[in-house]
Image 1 (cartoon, each protein chain N blue to C red):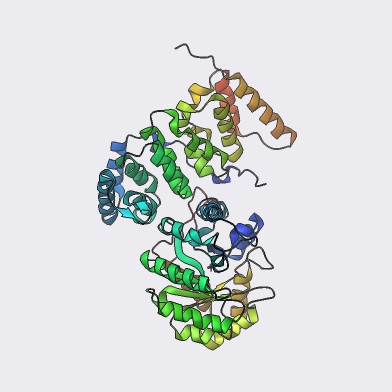
Image 2 (tube, rainbow over the protein chains, first blue to last red):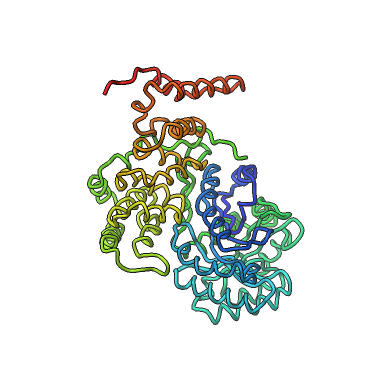
Length: 282
Length: 222
C-alpha cells in the first residue's frame, strides 16, 4: 500500500515516527504550516519555521525514504494577532519556492474580521502564484464556518477545484462536495474523524476527490492513521484501487496542481534499500 | 539531540560543481537539458544579466533561482543556479541574501558558487553557517575549494571531523592532501576520535585512517 499523507506536522514528530511511517507504506507527505501550540510573537518566528519546512524537515524525511513538501501561510489562529499579521508581506518570496505545493493552512478559527482579511488575501496569493489552497475548516461552529469559507472561496479568484477543504465530517461533507472542492478528512485517536466513520463516509459519498490525513502534530494524534483507514477500507470491501485512489492518487492530483510535486527521494538521501522511491503521478 | 547521520546518506564523492569551469558547466547543461528547460535557462540568464524586473518583493532573477528545480529538474538544478548567480554577477551581499532566504537546495547552490564568484574571504560566514547544520548536503557543499582557500585551521579541522561524524566522504573535502599535510593537531583530533569510537565498541571509519595517513606526510617546501 503506497500512502501519501496530505496533512501532517512532522516538525512535531520524532524520527521513530518517520521510520514507522515508512514501514507502514508512507512515501510522501505534505506539511502545512500552522501554529506551534505556543503562540508566536513576531514575523521572524514564522520565517525560521518556514525555512525549516524548506530545509531541515525535507532532509530529515529523505533520510527515511519519504518525499516531503510543504504549504506556506499565516494560519487562521495567529491571523488575529497584530504582531504576527505582517508576515503576510513575506509570503510572496516563499510561495515561489520549489516544493511549496499550496497556500495553507488558511481558513477560519473564530471567524473574526481579521481572519476574513487574511483568508481573502491568501486565496488571492494562491491564485497569483498558480498554487492550490489548503483550507482548514474551524473546529468550533463547523457548519457555519464551512459556509462562510465557501462564500470566501466563491468571492476569490481561485476556482473551487483548486481548493482542499480539510477537517470535514458528516455534517459538512455534502456542502463541500456540492461546491466542487476537494474533500479532506483528518483521522484522530479521539477527536475529528475515526477510521470507522471515515469508511462510512467513503461508502456514502464515494472515493472521488477524497483525501485522508493523520494531521498528526504535537497533540494526541497518530501518524499511522492513514494506514489504518486503508486497512479498514480493504476489510470493508473496498478494492485496492479505491485505497490507492484515496491514499495516493487523489493527493498527487490535488497537490500536483502546483506543478511542484517531486516524489523522487534523492538516492543520495534515501536510507532504505539504498535506492530512490517510486515516482507518483503515473 | 539529533544524532549524527551515518554513512547511510553519503553524498557523491568529489565536488565537480565547484571545480568545473562555468563555461564547461554551461556546455554540459545545454547537452542534457530538455528543450523547454534549455529555453527557460536562456531566458533566465538574459534576465539575470540585465538584472531587470521584479516579482513582488524579490528581483526576477531571484525568482528564477527559486523555481529552477521544477523548471530544469533536480539532477541539473545546482548547475543551473550557479550559472544564474554568475550571470547576475552576485557578490557577497547578494549571495548572502540568496543563501539566507533560500531553501536548503538554494543554499547548497550558493556554496558551490562561492569559489567561482567570490575571490576574497567575505562569504566565509555562509560556509560557517552550513558547517553548523547537520544537513549532509550542506556540509558536503561547504567543504569545497572556497573553504580550502579561506577557512582558518581550527574551523577547517572541525569541518574534516564533522565529515567523518556525518558520513560525508572525505574525498569531498577540497585540497585535503595539501591542508592535512603535517597537521599534528588534526592528527591528535583524529586519534582521539578513533579512541572514542573504539572505547564505545564502534568501528573507526576507513576515511579516518586515510586522513591520518595524510597528516603524517612531511610539510612540502614551497
